[in-house]
Image 1 (tube, rainbow, N blue to C red):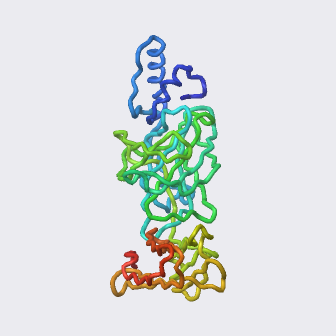
Image 2: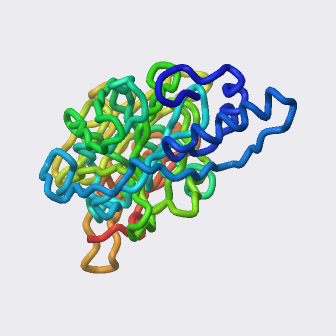
Image 3: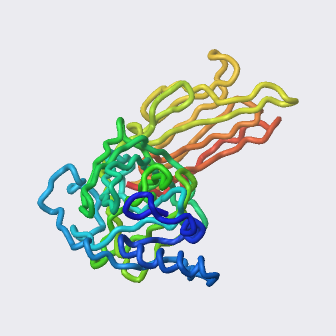
Length: 354
């Protein structure tokens, strides 16, 4: 770990390997004390999280800005930041915050991150990660996408937002995701992500020490309320029509399928052909050989469900997946190998109305 440049003695490195969160400049005093204790043979303290106030981090408002700080997006901070966080790792830092997108919103367009620094290294190179909330206990799990490289040049002990627009947007499968920056301590030391310590809070954050692997350690400092991370999102159909993806009901539902011929025969993704906005068919071996017809109907006015119907002209193992791209909900149907395809008449398929 380095503060105010790269001059901290090597003894501190062993101490800083303990994962935790550092809150700013005054940690230098504790690091120096622990380094001296280590030199004298004493055991340094090893808290899971360090909470050390930072005198230069006076609150600063951002409400006067528009656009560049995602002021029109999803914001959990109160517009001022009292501190800055990083981990105690000498390798890397990875922070994310949970975002709950409004219903029907599934495309991230921009991510804004508030940065500060406590050294004369003026620029930080970072990646922005987006994780699904499918880890243990709803923690960050699958990496859905990342944007890299990005650059920030905050002033010394200042607080500045840096906006990154996502080309074409990033479609996410559900409205609950984790978003945040990851950066290398080896390349860019003494950079901090801004922290709100007196706002309403209410959304969990996690930290880790790997640039890519999902961070899973809860950020639980006594004063934490929100990190300086904001996002902009919009509603979008993430169903992109292709030879293997059938988009139905005005592009809201994506139908895909796989097949496996018996006795180790051919297998792969089914090819699709759209017939109407509600109906299409699948073929496996030849475009002239129709295997299955699928349709998705809006039954919301009758039983608050979308319906899935399918009829097959095959006995090949088939797996059909229907995904509601607005909510991420999906349903899967499987026809066993060497079995005549049973008709599907599922009027309870997806409870995602309207």
